[in-house]
Length: 345
Image 1 (cartoon, rainbow, N blue to C red):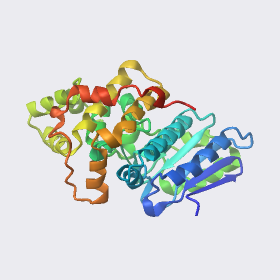
Image 2: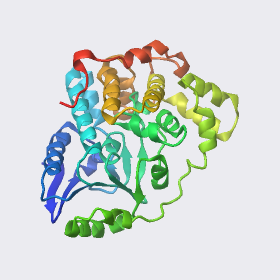
Image 3: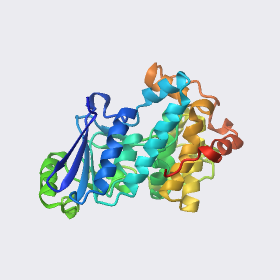
């Protein structure tokens, strides 16, 4: 059974993710179907633009199929996990550089791998149910799929805050943070798609934008910038401890639950991206260094076990807290991979 519904409608290519019972999680099989279609449409002169959306009420795409990755890791099939990440990242880069207008209609949960699919499009549409997040630190991974690039472009230190905590964004927050371009109520999407198919005119998307619901992070900018401006995760934690407010207490509670390795690596990734203004390919190559090593050398398998598989929410992280993670470990996890390097081909 196909996991996507790809069809040509008038002047557009329209692909819908059709795995709603799994919240459209991106599996190896779905990726194998999706990537060739999008690449073929990129050079098809009969198609003016591409629309990407998803079935179901709950999610556009709630992330990569973490259970599948965990299964490969625990069965010793590390190469399968690495190949999945490599193929996924190549598609992320293709979407970022897509030569035609690419409209993503993102409803419900948009997390992790879902961000990689929807938030690199040229026209990123959110609605009243949208909830976007990069929650990888919760399961011992990093904001990958180009997520560290997006976080590095966010205003002030919002990227470090969202990456370390895994907090969610509503439609207004997503637009403010640079993960989306505009808000259109979901009930108006069918009519928009029909008009796009008739005309092939991508400007209709921006013309349909409406005022989004209010977000919360713009109002929190001064607190976020004040505490997340340090060079390391340790600096951030010490700053949070220095002030006793509702914001610092809540943030410290969240940080205490997340993977110490992941949070340290996340902050370092964002800082490297911001300092060097890396291209999407360079960012993905850097992220791949971590995910290539994730199964053997990080908290990833334990985090997935605790949060997704057993659901006991009691992960036994490799380090007691974020301050206990050696700086050299993060450097080692982000070292070049030599012949295994992530490349375009």
